[in-house]
Image (cartoon, rainbow, N blue to C red):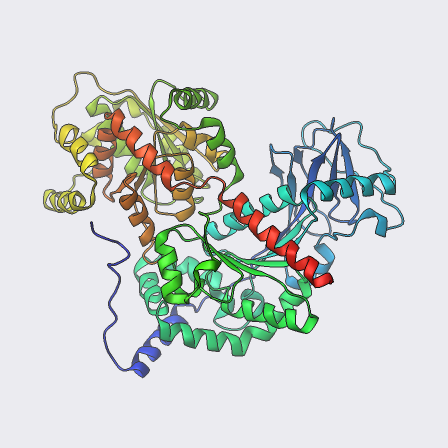
Length: 608
């Protein structure tokens, strides 16, 4: 089987000085972009405890006590002190309110104090506009001892709250999503926990580190440039030079940021935020004579950059054997520090995975039918979920058009749900089109020679069982006696992704690590349509080696393969079971439990 991670670029053997000059010039040229410091987020907790709910007000830093009768599942805040608060809806008993922090220096004014109500002379509940139906029985004056009793009872049952600092940057949505899934678990397991998401490089204002975010967005839109930079930077000599340069120019500033926040624990979810922050954290611990544990959660699945791996971390959480081998080879990380946890994903997937169970069982099938009905999808039809990221990018329209034509030709009844994200133009086009008359003659022609080459190459990688299905159903050029009934549903930016993945029979998506991990968590087969060279190449291998999906780039070929899958029920069930083997729906919970236990041990030792 061909490996995507092994087909990397070969760097010619030229002199070290020439190679370094070339790499540096490429880096400086590609990073010559302006950029603003991306907003970090701090969160306020509102958690249920007995008959009441305990929370914190973000502006007055006072505690809230919300009676259980209050409809506080949706909190809506307006502009306050020039800061636009986000509206966030949550169905769980734990609700957080996000507030952007525009600069690190504003942290002290905007962050939430963890002091108990006993430390303040009185606690006054401030009015909050609750969306939809505001609770009428919110008390306006809570006594100090009542609040303190609530908080102490929570701490006794679940553990004392922690102050967590996540290190990340908006270079792809997966890093932030992982941090948020972990933060959610911290709040569930340790109520009262506060946390922040810090980009350590942008506020340094040192070139080229300050341009990390805009540079990534520019390069990821130009895959060949990104591939070149990724593989040059993923070498030992470049790593040594980068570590040396960033230490000399940025270490003191990074140390001041972390020291100002004064965390109980530091968690890195970004490959560039390990070497310097780790050493800065250790210096802070030495100066303050208190140990601050440092953990790295690798958010890549099948391949990862060398900067992820530092042997000095307290624990390294990974998702695959491929990453484990890299961590030992590139970072010399000892076995006792490596935890095979899986990728941290949203809590909704753990909930749905538990409710559904084995999707191939009778109870699992029944649950999926009910979920389809809840989402307004015909439960009698096969469901294909098509994704292209939050911006709705990728060849979503071309893939959808090919699927409609092929499914109709082969007599497959299906509902195609296309997640367009923020791409409202695509959503409108899909909804307004008359799909009833759409057929293969409306599709652009594919060169026969290129099509044959793709089929030969795909056959070498594909599992034997999948190839049997294609040989049986895929080579039939005759039209089915009765055409398939195909619906197309355009979806915007959705928050209930777990529900749609439970309802779907197949996921069609790019090779994002978080997306594949979420699909595997609910045992969903995957068709990978593209990947970003470098860190996403190994994700394709995860799918192919795990035999729960395939990789195709040409829309007509994608449609042909999918139609064969949908007509072979036993193949879909086999792929679902293999997908579930790769999944770790409780990864975020397990990671946080481990981090919390270790952190609390060090907090006790620090007090001695």
